[in-house]
Picture 1 (cartoon, one colour):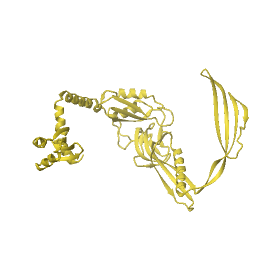
Picture 2 (cartoon, helix red, strand yellow):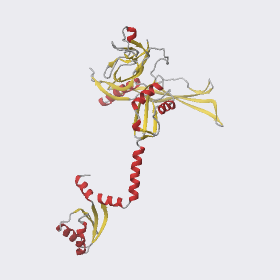
Picture 3 (cartoon, helix red, strand yellow):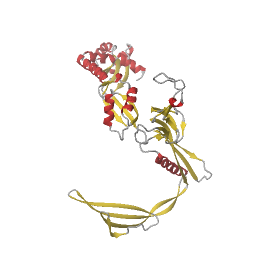
Picture 4 (cartoon, helix red, strand yellow):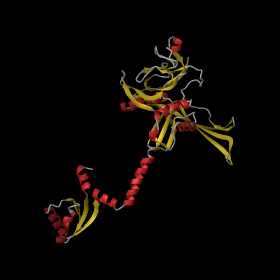
Length: 406
């Protein structure tokens, strides 16, 4: 809405229609009297226009003089809106009550979601959050999300990291289950080391001492969280006695925590302008056999591939009787002969083919359940202008820590 239209809306205006033979005369008289008419639209039997609410009264003597018929089509603007509200006190009260109720209800948590559980029962996590104060009906401002997250990690041993985010009336508890490695043993001492290369984004330590920080580049096998905790010279224990010897200045624990890093996966692809593709020749052979349990009985046709290059299609047909599956099936085979055919590609097609090869290779390296955060590719230089090479890079954000005993 423009500033001019906003001004008209604040002051209010009336959309009117004028009918009669003196319509043109009425419009001219109004303009001569300084009555501002806007957006005049003429039709066969009437004319539509807008006039300010204050100036509408000044039209009345002109209407009588020209013997025209004026009709109010619509009243638009803030003054008319306020007037309609004032005559509907019940509506105003209900509207105000609705806004207050909505504001009050939105100040509480009504839904708690648990995300990230695979081995842990979500009900166990939800019960733990309830005991820590996060449950449906709790006032949002009374929650210390950071403290609840830390206490949740300590309360549920199989959780290595937890984060809580509140959006509206919904609290989402995101957890990462205990890091890969040996089963829990309170006497087991370990470090958290890098499973793969990456750039550190965040380190969350439950137990142990972080030896890397945000922005560090690490290689597979590097220690991320040490299970050997060192104390500074002069630091004292609870009994206020100085730590003097090495045994007292070091403590061995089982390292626990998560280390998020940016990890990259590369794929390479290449293509020439002249390629060979396997295409059907039109020849095919079929065969079929009966399978009863582990036994196979030949029925007819060919059961072994008779061609150098072929595509094999297999169709199984099972039988049932009164919803009881009979352990008998007929297996039909079809071998379609393929032959190599040379095809010339355009530079764009060759580049796209190399790109798709590189993308496929990069995707195959990404762990299941991990989604790429960023991806890009570059065209590599080659000495042969008939060959195109592409390097495709996919970057992910994942926990690269793995437990290693010592």
